Amino acid sequence: MRKVILINNKVTGTVKGFLLFYLFTFLPLNTAAQGCGIDNKAFSTGERLTYNLYFNWKFVWFKVGQATMNTDLTTFEGKRAWRSSLITGGNKRLDRFFTMRDTLLSYCNTDLSPLYFRKGAREGKRYYVDELWYTYPNNTCQLRMHRIDADGEEHWKTARYQDCIYDMMSIFLRARNFDSSNMKEGDKIALPISDAKRLSNSWLQFRGRETFKVDDTKEKFRCLVFSFIEREDGKNSELIRFYITDDQNHIPVRLDLNLSFGSAKAFLKNYKGVRSEMTSKIK
Image 1 (cartoon, rainbow, N blue to C red):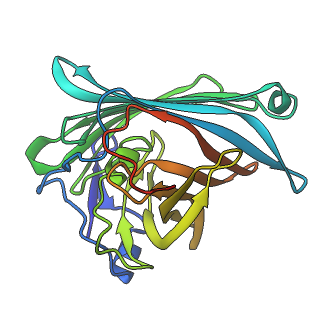
Image 2 (cartoon, rainbow, N blue to C red):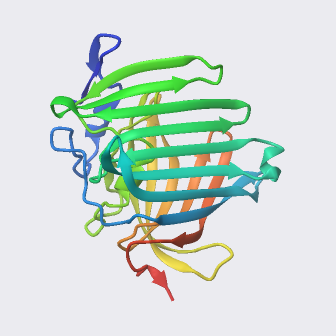
């Protein structure tokens, strides 16, 4: 059973809902004692990905903005590290209904074990900040968490876990390096993800393989399809379904997002600086 020690609150307990993971047959999950890293074979420094964003409004899809993701090998606190950033922004059409400006930043060790995460989000009239700092004392994963609420109130806490914990960005880099050669439809991979408020009971589920044509282009790709699922209040919710290229790069070419304020999609527009040949591309 996975356990968490809430250091600030001086309370020891079991992560709520994590027993549910054992009701399924998951692919192996690294624990902190075994190491939270993974070999990177998917990307290299200088990778640049650009996406068009679409939002569903009264059963009609509108282009509402763009997202860019940049990945570089740099330094963090004097050590070599991967820096990955994701910036999303709505256009004027979306701003008339809902303001969306999100900036996500992540630093990971060269083996992709997380070091730092920050999310600054303006969603509607709300603006909040999440920050996480990772350390690995005594074969555990310790998080120092900082949150600034929309009302400006700050919250700090520290938690220590026996398993590896990830965030929205570091898990993205990690997932791109999964070996899919032996995956079967329905396979699940437990992926505990945290922000500065809570730890999510979440996992990836492999949906199979499909061919996807990128909107407004002639490009087609053979893709692996995954769902990111979260369990809350006794219910499973598919938050994201994403399509990644079935090659060494594992680049997401399409994302379907179920948001609190509606449905959105992201389609790959441009890519450069990829590590390997795009063998999934259908000519």
